[in-house]
Image (tube, rainbow, N blue to C red; front, top):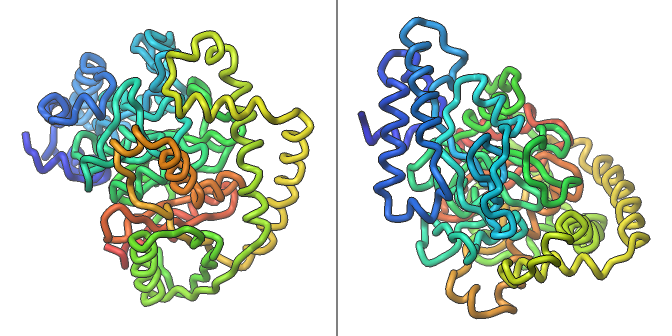
Length: 442
């Protein structure tokens, strides 16, 4: 067994298994032991699925020995955010409202990953009911940022990110409704893929805002993101070979610079400079329709979130963290007419936006305008919590509102990311571009 395995990519682990250098049983035991021994293990994992993991690992080990592996990721362990149903294991979405909720079947994406031989390590902590970009959860646990243990790790896929960043999983599966894969990826120096709404199955995933909810991986490399997307869907991965920045046209969305603080801006500028040196050409543009879409976030997100969870929240409001409860309750202030009118206008904006970006390979902007906020101050200062949560999600929310796919890459400056946004259902193209960017950024 080797501690070096704890920092390897999924792709490299899979190749090690294929070469007979890594046994899935030893690999899984190494991860489980590392989780139990880690000082932040309980703040990252809500619960382990140890018996399941070892059973799956033994089966993968047999397949590897007899030459019947199910694919490159057969025998590779991963973590799952605590809103993906796991048969016989509690799935509580970070909330006391769902305490001891035990589903009878796996989420469809978990079934798909299991079908290609991947191993379920356990369930990771998250923002309560996934309704925050910060990752602060005093109800269950708050995962620390890998670069600042006194700061939040980003949400809502906080444990998914930190399971990878602290070497306790090679990949974490999260969800992204307004930035919940990309924010924790950026703040913990990971690659995070936000898939197009409607592409990856949400069956067996505890909802927040089903109209915007998406499933995606938080991992170490773009290759891993491509491999994991394929596993979640049960299809072949994108071909990243020969990816190049030559003749690439990027649109820098200047809307993403509003409120951007010095460190995220420095990380973005540094990364963009290297991407341009690699052969990409850049145009800068501010699009007023993007600001118009952002202004509709309240009615679009909170109304549906409140409608989804109204009965549970109003029955036991005191079980919730007050800041999260307040966000849900804001949805009660909008009328049905407000909600329908906002969606009608958003559909128009989406069409206008796609027309504006038709000549570009991707839109680029800083993943987050801010750095990871301090846990103690978030707990003691309501105004600070509200402001930081809104700024954390401001840029990522653009991709959700406009129906795009998105990829966050580490810039090389701690806790900062550069985000690529691509056309709906354009993940394969975006991943190829991401692989070319990764080559010059690393």
